[in-house]
Amino acid sequence: MNSLWPIVIGGVLPAFFWGITAIFQKQSATSATGSAVYLIAFGAVCALAGLLAALIWRPAPWTAEGLGFAAIAGACFAVGTGLISFALFAYGVPVSKLAPIWSCNVLVTLAIGAVILGEASEVNIMRLAAGTVLIISGALLVSSA
Image 1: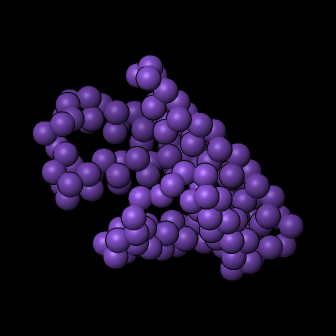
Image 2: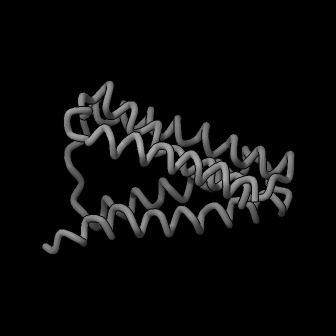
Image 3: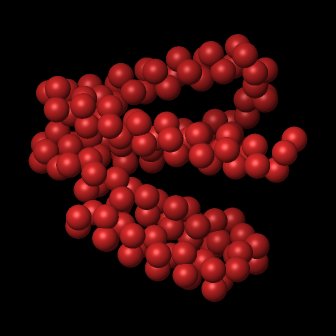
């Protein structure tokens, strides 16, 4: 397998689809759908996608530990998504102002990965610091445009 495929499959395509997701989330909010209804519909489709994936790709065995981590990930995602939906619905915030701030989530992932998962030795600290400054600067610049 070409070394570019994992980047396309696990990075470029998710970024594309998540970008589109934000647009439909905004459309849902402007169609008078509150955060709770959005989360129910969103969660139902995610569950159906999981069932379909289980039918197509023979899933790995279910473990209590794996299910627990998946549930925590889902809870974190639901809280974040619910807050975004609430801000879009209740305050009418432009999605183009919020999306650059969401992109800073990578900094949270990097920090937790480095500290809790012990991946700090696998990253170049100078590049990480420079990238952090650029990400924050970009988010501030774009969200204030």
